[in-house]
Length: 118
Image 1 (tube, one colour):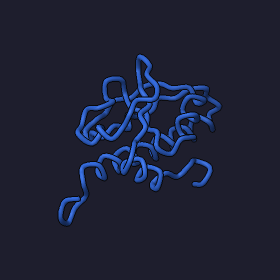
Image 2: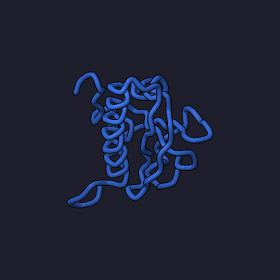
Image 3: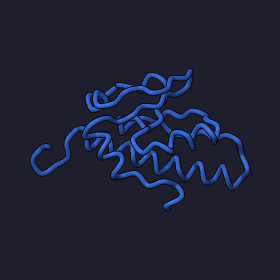
């Protein structure tokens, strides 16, 4: 960790966690509207990313059932140095699911709040 600040891994996990919370709100809105799918935001480590993609709610709920999983736009699987502490667990044409590993995985799990617990 850098003096007086967060490490690259910590910043990357925090960024992904912020977008994960936004995506949970998107899912809740889609459920309330009785939709089968929604457009979600990329949860990659890049704080300037504005990518989005469509997932079914079933796909999104599967991703959220794993506290260390993040969904990212295709091609965003390893863009930043911090993503070296992650592995891809599912690929698709529009998005991928990455699992944070080691310290990053522990941080992600600690920061995780399932939609049911909110």
